[in-house]
Structures are given as structure tokens and as C-alpha cells.
Image (tube, rainbow, N blue to C red; front, top):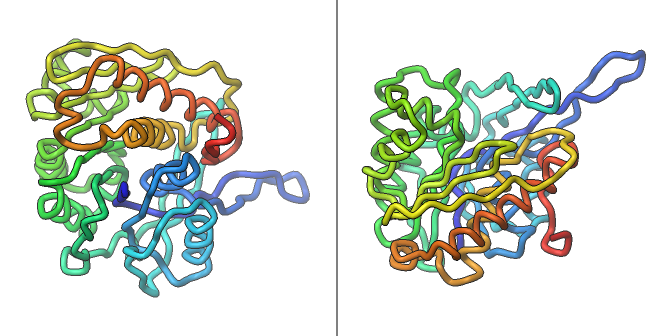
Length: 308
């Protein structure tokens, strides 16, 4: 099983309301939640470890997980509120305003994190759950405790507005990057992580020095570039699509990569260390394909395997 570890929240998506004004419609979301949903829909054995509220929005999130065949048995439930993210779309690009204080997801502690069963063979981390304390420390400690024998993929999906202590965040993120087998970043993430390097290659070299087997950089409409441990590069174009919005695009890309590597039996530390150029290309192309479907429809609505 691939266990996705991180935030589950409600995206409040703008929609026309009576009287000609805009309203908001609640949709299940969150970077890590979206990746888990996409994995479940693609047929991968998937679970989600997160903080889930018992409020009405938490019930909506739980129902969505069940509908997409995502195991939520390890989720930690409380009566704290669900995180809300109000979305603003400009030319299909999403910006967010978050309401996250004292939420069920943010207030997780290391003591609440369960021991993971042996059936979990891979871990995925990312999103705002890596920035918002105390949950950020809880996830970092979980990775340190449970990631030594499991394949790990990390997508920091950096949102600077969530980072209250930059030095502390960088220290935690660098430690987690150093424990990851696959690091996936956007070009914006890469610029934040390595602000002093001038070239893309120079920025990627900083990540590669941390020891991952694979580094993937997504470039929006320009596709994605992957780098293997031996320096080999893989270029994959973005899927052709009519973009409605980009909500969940990167999350779905992650799921496509994970699903393909899992399907081919390569989502293990040893296999990733010896991954071939063709295997990486196939995984990234699958990620681009499923992301292309997601951006063609409103909200984070990943495709099912039958749609691929």
C-alpha cells in the first residue's frame, strides 16, 4: 500500500450565485488528499494518514475517500474544525486564502502518529502539512521513524505564506528531502529551495546532492524533466488539454507517477536506485496524462483508470 501523509481540507471553489454574485461551493481537497484520491481512482492500493474532523466537512472528506477506494483507517479523528481554502481563479490559475487555525489537520502531534503496518510499502509526503506546526514536526518525525525501509516520495508544494519561521522550515524540509527516494518539485519550488543557483541544472544539483534516486521538476505547459542518480535526464511534454483550471494538477501528476511505478513493481528503494530512463519516462508520461485530464475540468477531479 502507498500511504499518503498530509493535509485533507475543503476547497471553496467560486461559483455563480443567485443575483449575479459569486458564491463558493465546498469541494474535498488538499495536496496530499488529492494525490490519495487520484491513486485510488487509478487502482492503486492507497491509504491516507491525516487529521480528520468529525464536523460536516470532515464527513464530506471521509465520504470522498470511501468513494475513491482510499483507506482512511489510519486517519486521526477529532472534533477540531476542518481546514478551509477559499480559491480565486485568474485565467485558470488558482490562488488560495486558508483558514487553518486550530484545525484537525494542523494540530496533529508526533505522539498521535500510529505505528505503520508492514503492508505499507511506500510513503508520500507534501503540501502545507510540511509547513504548519505542530503537524509539520509530526510528519517529519513519522518519516524519520518509518521511512528507512519504505520508498518515499516528497513534493514540498511550497507556499511561502504558510511559513512562519523560514530557517526552521528549511531545516525540517532539508532533513525530509534527505530521506526521500523521489523528490518532485515545481520550477517555483526549486527557485525557493535553491535561490542562489542561476541555472535549472545548478538548482537540481543541489537537490541531487541530498541523495534521492529521482528528481522531477514540473514546468507547467513546458512539461517535466526528470533526473536519475547517474545524471541521465528525461524530458516529457505536458499533455494537450483545454485548461479549465489548474487545481490539483501537480497532485494528480504525483499520483500518476506513483501509480505507474507501483504497477510495474518499482516503488521500492532498491528498484528506484536502479531505475532505467525508460521506466522514469513511462512514469512521468503517465503523470502528465492524468494531470492533463484533471486540468480539463473544474476543481481537483482526478480521472478514473477507465478514463485513461
